[in-house]
Length: 409
Image (cartoon, rainbow, N blue to C red):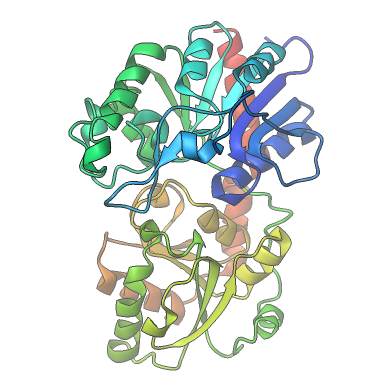
């Protein structure tokens, strides 16, 4: 059975940039390319595209959306979400009315729990593609080993005395108000967490991996790109990247020990270079090796060239879903060495496109890295794997099939 007319899809997120924002934007663009009437609604718009629309604030709102929608904690640099929003509910309701399906993305400050409640108690499909754990907890984006989201989020180990009851209140509100939501996870790891959570255990949970624009992220000549970044073309280049390399979840703290192991125990001193990509300002003096820092690279084609200047991407991430940097590296033909956490085991195929080490064994991680340096994986083979497994066009088709299934369910 086919959809009557052109499918109208409304994606709603926080921004059109950053990890979650770019994941949403590239899927929206692919929807458009495949003929859907797709619009992407955001709190912060930066792209010059008519199909990306900024959500207006509620009249009379003076506080910034993030001040209403999030608060800091005492034990982590990851913010908590409140389930509240300063965005105009009437505008959002008009979006709902005009669409065949609403696809929520990273929308913690764009859509309140109460708006989600209204939509989840109606017949139209409501799908939520998760970038992190925020919708299934009392507000934390990553639980950092805590399993209280499986019950009532109390007592919360991460918030201060003034906020100790807030996670329970948020979770309890969602349990009472939310009804029919189809959760989509990019990784099996997060999908399993949804199914074990008090919010998600009675919901429909699917896994659709994130895709990559293979015409944007593609291999460039490695020696040419190394010279462009003033890297020694005779040395292997190890890339470390993240939206913010200061983010504790990204594992920069493991790099000094790993570099020391490579230098002192694997006889690698002065035999490799490290390329650091991303925002933030980690203490690079801790790394006893040749380091080049690009900072944040906004242009995606330039980012592909930076990946192509590398021989291996190192991702010692502590907790993550399915990071773009991993998939984009693959698309550029660059293998990935990472801890076996989150969504990494879903896509890293040892001996094919990278290697995995036990969490958080830095010695094993260094050993896997040395393996890939001594016996380089074929960049052509890594790219071919990407073409077969992580094409954004295939992911868009999976979403279209899901939307059609839900419409006629």
